Image (cartoon, rainbow, N blue to C red; front, side):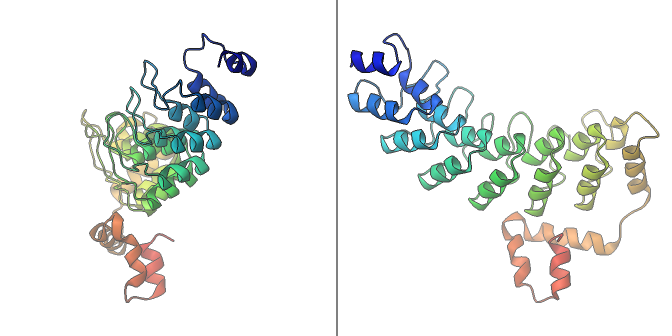
Length: 275
């Protein structure tokens, strides 16, 4: 055992050799360490980080497989409440995400600080978002910091993520302490992003906990973003537009795929789907 550790570069005083092997992607050493029987596959650091967390956050698929096959708990949480799936989403490793989902990872863990979908949006990873929602991730799940995934996309100015979330039924007017995604987006003054939210029915008249409208968060009166918001305030959209939003709202995010089954012309189906 001691000779093995010295030869492999894992010293006897290395406190968490499984964590290190998983983190560095040293699959053969990880396998050998587990086979000695001297280390528990679910051993935790003081922050409750397990070897599987380390493998996932660094995208070490082979190490993930070795650990899971050795009995690692796939839904274990660290001190921040993150599961290995959260860490894999933070890394953006689609192979690790798919493997974890295939081996019992919960796509909607009880929320503490984060969820896999929140992590994917934070990292602006559209592919991860689509994979998680296909696996059943709730598009309007709210954490205790940002709010919903759409809040995060607005806060981080991740328009591509927001577009996917909205198409898949995310609530454009979800609130976090009276703050809507439109309030978050207004701070960036991104006209394209603001237009996206408005087209999906963002409430231009929503006030935050300080009683401010989205336009009030933009100081410059000459800002194109402020002019856009003022235009929408003074020019209500067509009944056709509001009808589209109402149909989508009535269906709900879980049944938007039913639009293709409606007995209506294809052009109307495409209109309802924002395509």
